Each structure stands twice: as C-alpha cells, then as structure tokens.
Amino acid sequence: MDERWAKRACQGALLRKFELTPETYRKRFQGVRKTSGVSYKEVTNLLGEYLCKWGKGTGATTTEDAYNLVGLEQLYDICPPDLKMWLVDRKPKDLRSAGAVADEFADKLPAPGPSISVSPRGVIAPGQAITIRCQCPCEARRLFMYKDGIKIREVEAAGDGGEFTIPSTRWEDSGSYSCRSRSRLEPPNRSDPSDYVRIVVAEPSYPKPIISLRPSGGVSLGGAVSVWCRGQRRGVRFVLNKEGRHFPPVDSDDIEAVFPISNVSREDGGSYSCSYHSRSEPLAVSYPSDPMELVLRDPSLPRPSITLSPTGVTAPGADATIRCQGQRRNVTFFLHKAGDLNPQRHVDPAGDGAEFRIPTMGRQHGGNYSCSYRPQSEPFISSYPSSYVELVVAEPSYPKPNISLSPSGGVSLGGAVTVWCRGQHRGMRFVLNKEGRHFPPVDSDGFEAVFPISNVSREDGGSYSCSYHSRSEPFTVLYPSDPVELVVRGADATIPCQGQRRDVRFFLHKAGDLNPQQHVDPAGDRAEFHIPTVSRQHGGNYSCSYRPRSEPFVSSEPSNPVQLVVAAAPPDFTNTNIARLGLGATVLLVLGLILAEAYYSRPRGAP
Image 1 (tube, rainbow, N blue to C red):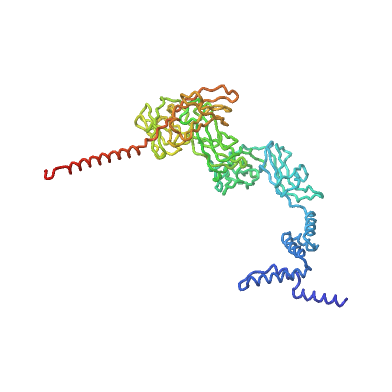
Image 2: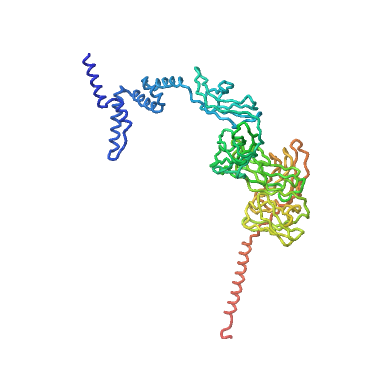
C-alpha cells in the first residue's frame, strides 16, 4: 500500500516537473493559434489532444463532466479577481454549486455606491426648489438620503435611480448630502455611500443675470451653440445650471461669461439658468436668471406645411386661421412669428395637424408666420420650421378688382391658362392668391396684371382670388376679388367650406337645385366637398351652409357663391374630315371620267 502511494506521488511530481498537469493542458488548449505552415487539420488535432488531456487530468469522463469543465472555465473568466479566487479555493464541482457559492460571496460585499448630483448648483436662494438625484443600477433596491451623516428620507428606486426634491429651501437645508442604496431582500445588502454634495442656502445680494443663446435662431443636432450669462458685477464666478448636467464654473474679469456646447446631442436640450457669485465671498450670490429653453432641431423630422385662411389682405376685426400640417401624431405644434424669439402659441392636437385661430385681428397681428412641432416624448427636440405665410391686416382703401381666366372655359391637363386681375388704379402691385400655392407679385403700370400658368397639372385646379396694393404704401390695400374656379378637365375639384363653429354638419348647395348636393360631418369647423372627374353637368354656382348637430333643422345663412366653370371638350373632327376627303375623292373621280369620255368621243382628225 505504501509502495503504491509512493509510486503515485512520484508520478505526480514528475508530471509537475515537466509541466504535464491539467492546468498546463488547459493553458495549451486556450493558446492554440493558426499560424503559417500549420494546416487546419493539425490545429484541430492539437485542440482535441489538449482538451482530452485536460479533461482526463481533472477526472472528467462523461459529457456532463465536460459541460461543467468548460462552463466553470467561462464563469471564472467573467468574475472579478477576488470572486474568482473565492471560487477556485472552494473548488465547486459543477455550475449550479458554483453559482450558489458566487452569490454567497456577492451578498457579503457592499454594492457600489450611487453617484449623486444636485440641480441647480451653486448657492441656492431661500424658497428656491432643488433636486438631488442619486443614480445607480438600483433595480429592487431602496434609496436613502443623508444630511450631515443622518438619514432623513428614503424612496423606492425606479430604473437607474431616484430623486429627492426640496420644493422650497430654507436656511437650515444647508449642509452636506449623500445617498446609498439597500436591497429589499433579506438579509439586506447595503451599498457604499455616495460622494458628498454641498448645498449652501443664502440670501442673494446681487441682481439676477440675463441668459441668452448664440445663435439665437435655433441649433441642429451635431451643431454648436453658446450659452451667454451676463451679470452686473465684474470679476465674479458664473455658474450654469441644467438638471442632470454639470458645467464647470467660469471666472470672468468682465460682466459676462460664455459656456460653449459643441457637437450638440439630444441630452443637451432642456431648460437652463445661470447665476454668479463673488470669488472671495462665496455667499455673496445673485438671484438665478430666468429659465431659457434650448430646443434642438432634428433633420430627420419632416418639415410641416402651413396655410392661411382667408388668404390675401384681412380687414381689422376679422378672424384668421393658420393651419399647420405635419406627418406624425403625438406631437405639439408651435406657431412662430418672425421677429419674436418665443413661440406665439402651442397646440396638442389629437391628429397630425393643428389650427391656430386669431380672433378679432388688429394691426399688431400682421406679419410672417411659420410653425414647427415637437414629439411629446422629446419636448426639446423640434422639426425645422415650415415656410412662411404672410398675414396682412389693413383697412381696405380701394374697390375690389375683377378676376378672370383666359381661356375662360377651363383647361386640359398639360395645357396653359392665364389669370387676369384688373383693378381701378394704375401703377399697383398685384397679388394672386390660392390656398397652398405661392405666386410672385406682379408690378403693373396699367390697370391689370397677368399670371400665366403653363403645363397645367391637377394641383393647379382650385379657387383663385387676387388683390392689389400701392407699391410705395404696401398696407394701402383693398378687398380681394370674388373667387374664380379653375377647372382642369379630367381632374377633380374640391370646394372648401370654412365655418366658425364645431360640432356642425356642412351642406353644399348648387344654384337652381333645391336639394343640397352633399353633406359632411367634419371633426373641426371646416369641410371639403370633393367632385371627382368633373364634367359639364357639374358646372354652376355653389355655396355652402351648416347646421348644428344638436339642432338639425336650424341652419346658417349660405356662404357667398363660387362659380365652377367646366368647358366642353374640343370637338372631334376626325370622322367629319374622313367623310369630306372621301367626298372630294369621289368628285375628282367623276370629273376625270367625264374628261376621259369627252376626249375619246371626239371625231378623229378634229383639231
């Protein structure tokens, strides 16, 4: 017995001496590489040989043994060094026991401490709200906040952390704050504490600064922008505040500081404010500036379209509606007026379009308007603005002009038509209006102007009106002309009807027909009546009215009429021309026969 034991001990010593242990073959197995001059067959042979000797050396004889051998090796590779040493010392036999041993080790260690941030930073004025955020992988954990080492509050963590808010700070809120997490399972596992953040509450002694953006007209994702903070003291330290973002303070010898932001990303969008304080007296601080939003434009969002109703010049006291149409739902639309940095209004519609109403307009409402939208899930990401529509508010000074079409009977697809606008004053600027279409104004030395439209398409069909105004006094304007309808033969026609109430039913009427042509129940205060494939019987004067749905037999007065002119298609002379050619050929043939008969019936020798 002693001889066999001594023999095995001698064999083990020899194997270790010549590095023929299972650990040696494990390292050789993992170190196999394909090199030049070595075939893939030789590589696979080496892999098989080293794996076999590694397994035999550890006593692996079954498929399950090999499964645990390779699985444990992978587990060791992904474990932290201290956990790997813990596992190797305890020599687990399989993956299941290794997992239990690893969890036992992890439960005895504290979790990493959360990170902590406070917004706004710097000195806080009494009554100002602050938010302390603790961030960590906090699934199934609770968060605790400490002030000067004493636990004061706790919250359930959600996702990647939690927030503690002090809605109105007081002097006694000054202090050092930290946080830590604890598992909800028993026995509880506590994390290390976070770093400390210092909160100082003091009465501001300087007036608030002014915050602004450059460029001020907006910035696209990936672009650059600078936040300017301008105070009323020289030689102070400026602090820029944004929730969830830290900016290093800036010392300035002037009265302002600049915080540049390059390669702008989605995370940079949000609300910013700034403040400043004395470098030598940190408690001598300013009030925070008013908040300012940084909204980022995303080129991947399609631009919206914009329309104005009514078009042309609008008299004071009338109503106007600006419609913004997008391509996405769950967005907020914003109306912008040129020269005003802040949006005029915003609307959260149910669909992909929004209407902005301007009731009882005054001259102050005149100007150029555009619109944009922001996804409700990303309130600081915006589309690019739409094109502009011009809203002109002025008291008409001249009688309305006359509008006509030439040819007047309609036009075929691909043809040409001219819109004539005739006023009662010379040397004016004429404007042609059509919803959804822009025409350059025309200056005329006579009484009228011409707007040619070539290669007519379906989009050219619709209702047109025109107006004119003085070149030197652009707001000396007149009423627009009555509308004229351009009908494109072979195309469809649309007659829009605009009301001033919702929950109504619109009716389309044709002069000479006692019964309404159509009715529509729109979601808003506007309806469109479509006439597909217009033909001669559709021509005539049309008007519309509406009835409240709650009072179906009470109607509004009808609108002003609009004329739909449908020209007859040009006559087809093909068959007539063929008949005429045939008749001409017959006459020629008869004349030829008569001449031939006369020639051959002449006596011979006659002159």
